[in-house]
Length: 573
Image (cartoon, rainbow, N blue to C red):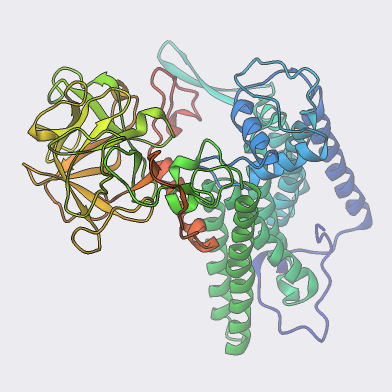
């Protein structure tokens, strides 16, 4: 595996590409060969021993096992959920748990909860095994780059135990000190149900593959050369499939590959067909294969998670229609929306959330002190609205039944608080060029600022509003602004939900289109509502858009100790 002793290329091999560090490698004696394997084996055994020592302790939930253990349970139970990371790491942890008898029923509520007799040890062992692989792989990487046994031992030992470097401040004079003790951070990360050991293992495996491939540069297009090139591409896909930070190792391999191809192209002994052959080999193994592998992991993810769960609301109505147990799966509801119906209304953009309100008011100094209106990604009773005519109450038992049509003037009454959706000439909380949206009134009685005109994206005047399928705008009757939602999060006084405004730009179709998702009206027959189920590629791209949106919305927790990268080497706080 380590390519310790290089042999000359045979006569059938294409003309070798010049390589600085391959050409400098010399055959090694059998005694040194034995020393190499003894050192490598000893380091590997130490890595195994340190990672697996007392791995069953403590027998309770530790740190982020709360999240990733819970997600593994959801995979085992086929329950759909939303996460900002790609799925491979969580799927592998779940697979390890499934193989070792875990049935996905432990709650993982909070750190400190006892595991009792639940067989979660298999998931910890899996993470520890991948964490162990980091150390011997680092040994091989440094050997391939330096051909120095001492350097390989030092590098792998630093990952095995680590050294602590810090700056000590005494009488305003900085003294650098190296503490002769171990830093067990790498060990601890490998002993629990976390994504970190999985990600680090795949990153270092792809880096090792890159250096192994380079060491076979004098035997281009032979089996080992192809194997390590394919290995590199496969583990690049694996690294990206655990967390998006795996892109950094893709960048590393990309720069390395560009430099390698440039050297091949610049060697006048190489023909153009040979250069093209090298180029196409790298395109196949470092671009095509990783894309196929990456998409295959997502296909597995979307196939396994086929049951409705807590993450449904982050995705479009069409996406939700593919999840068993969701109200839109084989949907049965009234096809058209009638006055008096109770509905939920979803913003139609990618990652759009539900129109939502609750009892809490906007704080002093933020527009009018009226009831907050937001969008919220989770399904909740506070997402329910009653559709009424603009000039009269619309009870569910009113006669005759009248349907909501394109161009109608309507009011939307929040079912829980019995206040009407409302806008007025006050600035929105964050987007100052937009108007504030609130809920106003009492027992469904408000004023003229509660009236909205419903405008379909397409369709004839007086066409009926169809649940799920019809996309529409809610245009304020007096101010001619459209109800608008986007990714901007409100402060904690609104529970960091998303801002809803009324935009004067009524032609904005990205953020002002909505659709009715749930439609409840007892006097109309339920029918099977045809929802256009998305293809795999539709779901693949929507999943990424939602993940990227979730990542962009992450905020640091207040009150926690934070640091910047420049502070790490000097241990500054």
